[in-house]
Length: 281
Ligand code: C2E
Ligand code: MG
Ligand code: MG
Ligand code: MG
Image (cartoon, rainbow, N blue to C red; front, side, top):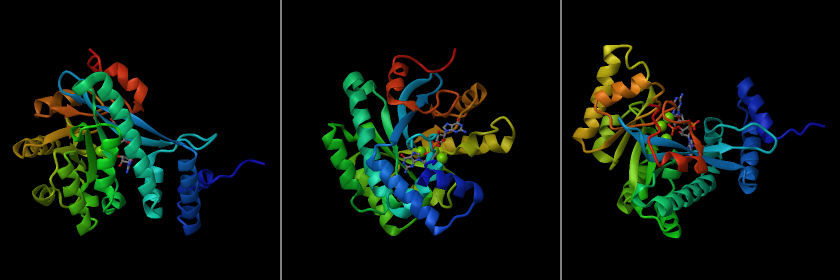
């Protein structure tokens, strides 16, 4: 008989949009077993400097490989991991693996090794142990805090009062702090006054159709101006074409990330990108 695992059920549930509590519980159990069995992998997507395309950083992006099944993307399972609380253990694994890879790059390339961005979800930001966990991971892997950047979302920071305090403690450790999907949340500009971020990751929706309308270009341009005026880095997300990269550079963007430069790839494949620009001439 065919195996009928939690992951299979989850796929069905997704297509049927039948969000029953039982499906969630089954998927949560499958995720937990997956964590115990080592079914998760981190891929890394380069963040490059414009216009040359030198890799200055990478973003860690998780994938789930349930036994004998196709890979499952984080958009499908991170929400369930959050609801079930498993994100705390999964997040600890992600942090440890990303720091291990960052340490290996630092050993081989010194300060030329890529800084590693690590996504942290809303539930993790509500965990008062998070700053201690990050400090411990840095210490165990012999990393200085400037080697990693924690990516948070505006929505997550507003999830509760404690989240902002956690963010401040993270910043005090000396790690970078990036506001992910910037511009899509509710209180972007208010947040910039209270939240000690170092980087704005300008959401893909502002980068798409850059040559389409004057409005789109004005918004993208303003967001890069806000960042530089506040002394923050701006990273353009989801850059897919040469044309976009050129426009973004002209609009003042110094950093970009997207399929035009590179897709998310295994840590071992990042290595060969560190010796030269990833831009196709
Ligand atoms: P995100 O943090 O905003 O990550 C960027 C997403 O955009 C990634 O999707 C990446 O593969 C995709 N992307 C990058 N460049 C392009 C492009 O040029 N075009 C298009 N269409 N897409 C592009 P991915 O890996 O599926 O991750 C989706 C989301 O899942 C992430 O969005 C993040 O919110 C979450 N996520 C991923 N990994 C983790 C993790 O380790 N922990 C947590 N808490 N969340 C994660
Ligand atoms: Mg991110
Ligand atoms: Mg993002
Ligand atoms: Mg995103």
